[in-house]
Length: 376
Ligand SMILES: [Zn+2]
Image 1 (cartoon, rainbow, N blue to C red):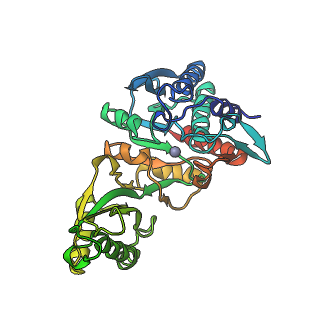
Image 2: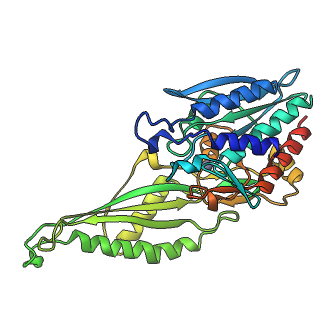
């Protein structure tokens, strides 16, 4: 078994479920155990370790390999330490079979954690310290809920020339991902007795027409807008609630829409676009979006020198894009150019039989080490 596999199995066996998904004080909640183990490992490899407090009992763990002289550039290796919840505690028992390692977090994102820390530790042990580049492993808390870890790191004034955020990308170097906006739509009607519908105004009917319009004509229009790495933006109406009983004309109906955005689309621009569509079709709804659900898209310039170097090392001709949102966007908003890279595939993330391929895990660690060695 390789060092990376050993570390991954150890991490899977240490539950770090995001506390948002578990009752208060559940023993399986929180990133603390994982952060402590990584801190010990990193210190043993000769890295300078410290914790950055984010929330009560929850800290980012930072482990730096500093150059002997003046720091001219900084690279962050930034995977997250938390996982989603489990359906069974068996998911905390790592299991190897048919070239795969199974367990909660195997690909999202403990595989990246293991590959990144192993690569940096190997570099430190080999005495191949870059002359003027500081490399910092940053294990972040809370990605699966509110991204408090990456927000705290960005707000701390941490500066870096590039962050490689660890998520399952099938070893593809990703420079763009979509953003998401959740809108609440509300239609108002007028209640009346179900026997006299002409005396009321049916809010459910109005919403039904709106949903049909957004899921058909509007969605088709979005398909014509294409980003070279991300394809078109999308919309999904995820819930609808209206009325109380069959014999009352409903006065209120609400629906929720998830609009996945491309770089360049903003909350005000999307809101104005949807409102204009509704108006054009004689429909009206109050549209609101909650600040905490706004996740901006990511688009990092692939011509940045460190991105170019990483692409060359990986022999990848052009960068890729992914649909899902992650810490990269938060760090980029905070002024740190960010890309996404890691072993495993997002299709296995959050599943009941989450797994990662041993080959993919080994390839990630090897590629990262190769890249780190090229840093001046
Ligand atoms: Zn993840």
